[in-house]
Length: 285
Image 1 (tube, one colour):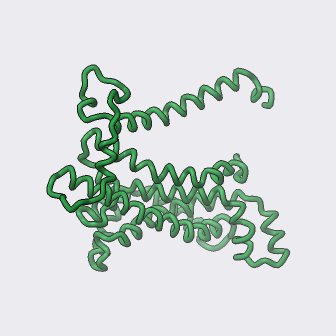
Image 2: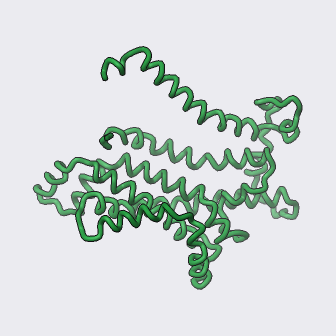
Image 3: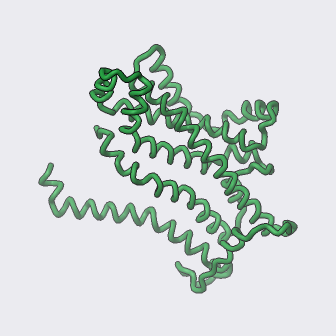
């Protein structure tokens, strides 16, 4: 196995796979950025071109320009809608990420390390939550939100999105905690630490890369969530970013898409140091 790993053929295949993966990931991003910097007329030029001949940041300036109270024209009104949706998505995704980690970590630890009655049924229930589409729970959620006054509110969207992220993250973290070595946990208990102290001082630092990855996953699930925002907050001040993309022109769509990539990209950069250690603390196979 060591000989194969060091062979030139193996290295060439590895580098080629990495190159293809990089192209698969970066080419669409580069094309989005290129489209966002084109003037509207360049997108329909014949023959077409892959880069802007006269780069312009007008579409970005339009989105970032502070409001002046003039919303009577459609482009200006859409600009305000997109900007408000971008901010609303942050106001929803960040609390959802934090609450998901705080709730799902103890749950994942209990499911991964402890043995108790109905544990298998609870795990099966968590997996089953990923089997049905979010739209299937919209009717009961809408009825509850209308009666409680949460319809069209950020708090309502946070609660709705938690129904997606908590089962997913708890299921992932249960597998991660189950894969961690038990010797250190046993040693901590022998030294007199309580179950909670063992979790906080021993298990959580060991699982830090997985926690960072799950935080990013929870943020991305909430940031990209379309159905709940479209149905539960459409037309209200609480509408988030994804529904505002619908109906945008090509250049505007590219600009909005690039703006939508900024928060997830910054979050990935913030947690990359922990995420890169995930393969070290998690046994493979």
